Amino acid sequence: MKSNRSSRVGLAIIGSTGAIGGKHLDAISQLDSCELIGVHARRAEPLKSQADSLGVRSYQTLSEVFGDSDVDAVVIATPHPSHRDIALKAFEASRHVLVEKPMAVTPSEADDMIEGARASRMHLGVLFNNRFRPEALKMHDLINKGVVGKIYRATMTSAMFRSQDYYDRLDWRGTWDREGGGALINQGIHAVDMFLWLTGMPQGVFGAIRTLKHDIEVEDYASAILEYEDGVLGTINCDTVQAPNRQRIEIYGENGALIMEDWNVILHRLKTPLQEFLEQDKTAEFVAPETQIELSIPSSSTNTHAPAIDDFCRSILGGRPPLVTGEEGAKSQEVVAAITLSGCRGEKVPIPVDRKEYDELVELLRHDRRLPSSI
Image (cartoon, rainbow, N blue to C red):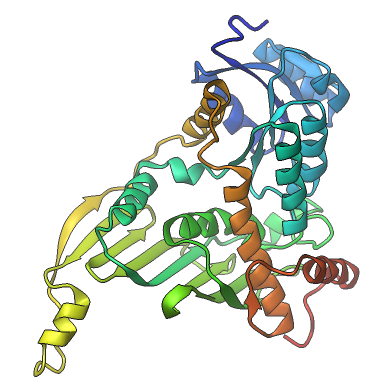
């Protein structure tokens, strides 16, 4: 079935009939770096119908997927509690892995996946496709070039309202046992990843998490203060209780600010760098440095699954790491765990988090099926 093994990566999608499967199928159909060999899902009838309509192979079991020599890599699009075990089976079978967000439930599971990839010398990529948005790439480039100067404050809000019916429709949603968290690990993790990609990893976190509005076990509201080197602070808010929805990142530096509001990006440039203005201005008590809008990027509707999958496949063909490696994808997992641990313990948590302590907390939350009553 593969027309040219040297120039195309043979892909199989695991979890192809799920909510996200259609996006992967559409993206792969646009690419010349890969070829869809087959699909796998738990429900036999929808799987066969899907495979027949696509003209690809239908795999009833994972063993069939990994037994097909035409499959070079798998895209894991199943619920994230299954990601670790599927990825490890893929590495044992010498297959590359591109896994949907979040890459796992806990940092320990992410560690296992990263080690499995290293030991097998296979690629592990995480599908944080927002990094491939043109607006995100431009923001990252401007920061790397020092356009905003040394960053001294950054903040992120990811608010995506969800109804009670959203949680009630699928029995795994809103549970510690089968989802492993709520607004942070599911809805907000794309924004957390983006924020960390732009600002770097903090050294410590003080978080607060609550179940404010929904009849669920996990958090529907989370806020945190992130501590960086040199006393720099950042803040994060993720929730599923707010209307209207909002995606916003603000990054303030000595030379200006980058503000993204629902993917509309504006660069504000200070006419005088902040510290220089503070040292020069001796009398104007309420006057702020003058700014000008230097760049404005409107939101685009680009399909970012296609470039994300394309980058992963070309990394295999070219023998280079993908843009979002397992190590990169695990950073948001680390911060989500730190916020959760801090929110449940009521104290600042250093990064990296203590694996044993966090795993024990998750087991407790699964047993109690709610957040601690003391928070």
